[in-house]
Amino acid sequence: MCSSARPGTGGAEYVPYEKRTGNESIVYFTRDLSPEGIEKMYGRVCANLSGRLAVKLHTGEPHGPNIIPSAWVKKFFADCLKDPVIVETNTYYDGDRYTTEQHRNTLKINGWDFCPVDIMDEDGTVMLPVKGGKWFTEMSVGKDLLNYDSFLALTHFKGHTQGGFGGSNKNIGIGCADGRIGKAMIHTTPGQDDQWDIAREEFMERMTESTKATIDYFGKKISYINVMRNMSVSCDCEGVAAAPVVTPNVGILASLDILAIDQACIDIVYAMKEDEHHDLVHRIESRHGHRQLSYMKELGMGNDRYVLIDTDNGDVRITAADAVKDLKPFTR
View 1 (tube, one colour):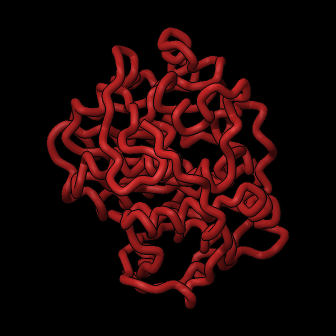
View 2: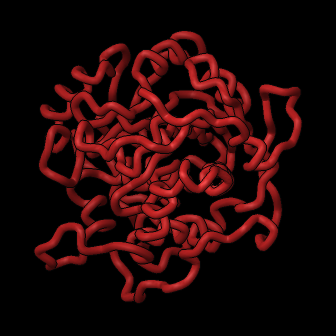
View 3: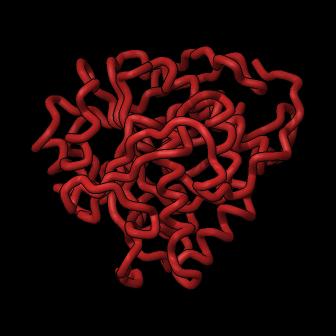
């Protein structure tokens, strides 16, 4: 299940755009933080999504203040999707989403009771192959993942305690791994008392290999939307205990390339003023979070070069710096 490889030590630094090599992917951008903004972004990346669609988002701990608003998702579903299903898995930590019963109660509290929610590991797990990984040859995911024909990662982009940041890679890699086996494979060295002992480069690589298992399974029938709103340094798994948000809201991005969309979000954060991005950049760098991006590139999961398309102004090409002009300080 696990390889004997040792953790890498490179690729954990921010690489400026001009120093990157390779092809470019398309990333769409809107400043419209609303259900309509999500709908507009979905329209740019939905062409290959057919059959039974799984929508993976972070539904959050009880009363979590920073999750994508359930009312936004409800309207998006009603306007754009036929028979949508939200997919989740139970948590590795003991809390309000640890068991399926607890999880379903939390879903109701947070307003996710307007459509079916498939807790994919409720009835078991299945192993998916990890191609080219150095830590795993296969990853354990909720077995219901195999019931879907296509996949939409609808991600709240934010900080993360272990990963530095949580984008599409984290949403899929942690979010599809089942709560007992898969998440343990990512977080814990077998036999250790500390269930969170794996960190920095090794954690980024394990999480990314988990993501690769899922995106390889869906092939071209997978798309990504990242919502850059309420970006605390804390993950939504911290709920009401999340650190205060000090980073300005930005907008919504969409792509068919998981690396390109997460890299574009990082570039937008780094393009902000020092007082706007200090806390989030420190969280990313202190956890060696950039290793998520460099390892995705090493595994052939996408491109870290991209064309950023401003859909608010005639589909013109812009830079990350253009995307953060005139941002307003965060206010709840």
